[in-house]
Image 1 (cartoon, rainbow, N blue to C red):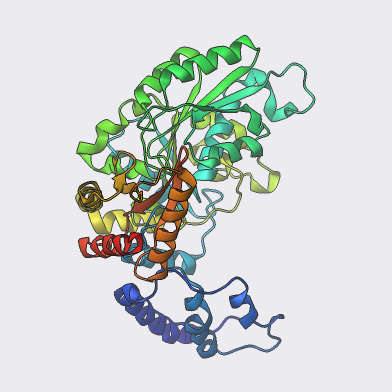
Image 2: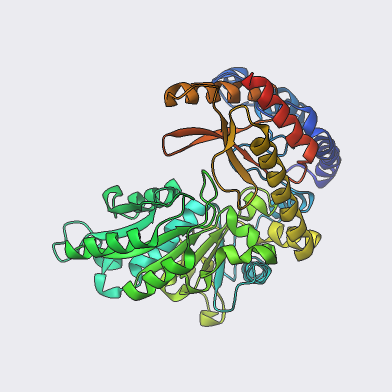
Length: 475
């Protein structure tokens, strides 16, 4: 038997106060957890309790066990990877989602889960200024969304017969090839592994000086593969690459894809949110010609983890790739209702649409756009400080969004390994401060540092503190 609602009411009020205090004071924590591997596990019993424990004791362990091992992604000084925010409306949405405990596998199992997902993904389409003709669905991460898109690309030609016959041991099936930038996210490679295409059949195309895929090199790669008897299948263009947030020339790539009859998937997991800002939409010119797009609201649209949105122009193809309806799942609604289980691997589906719906309503399209503009302005401010500092500081990539790649080169140093070690030490010293957390990447052979601004609590004072720490660490 469950605990009574009165117990929930008492402890939920306590936890609501705890959450409010945490959100108000999160900047006072060290952003990066300082525990060593195994330290959390060592505090915990090796076996589950036989007797029930009190909620008072369990909640007390949030501060004793959980908080010391938490790296605070909600911290204003979290500037690593792609910073994000669990916003107040999103947190409230998650609370209701957990309480309702809906499973949206079929329309019948929770009509609101299905229909709110249809509505909120279409709201997002409109917020991004995208035209009609897109089907939206929510997944957990961009990795899964991209895999679904490539599964649809593989299924578009029924003559391949992969749904029924598979790919193994078939002499009649040519090698299927996927193309992407040399800076594309590793999820493209993982999708190829998972779908049985193989890593050898992911072609990483060379980029220009601004780290954008070169269309002429893509064209050459496709032609070379056709000459060898391979079957070009799909291209993944990136709108906001993970390392340096470059945007591939989507329009030129789309023209090639249309000419060559290839599926075009656009990975806008991070950068796609910027389409909410009307003046930034030219960066995405040509998107209307794509077959699919992924954007992660849990990155730069202030929605708690996890929430990824896949837009696709050919939902019937995606459905054909995944639909398999057992007798116990048949319902009388037929074509009058969408059953999201038919569009992916999962049967059970969380009610993720609720938190996204609440975030969009609480901030509004204008508010979302202004928050993204603010982050981009902060990034330009930070990049300006680096550019004008001299003394070996340099911005190492264009800054189209809110992420800055930069590094420090000591006077007279030319050995790349020494420069890399120097910048790695800078990063370590900065992160040890507890005030901010930054990360790194490599641009070609260059080891560079990254500041990614995406948290609602990050201010100019935050990035000024980061800049002070960086200069101190470099001296």
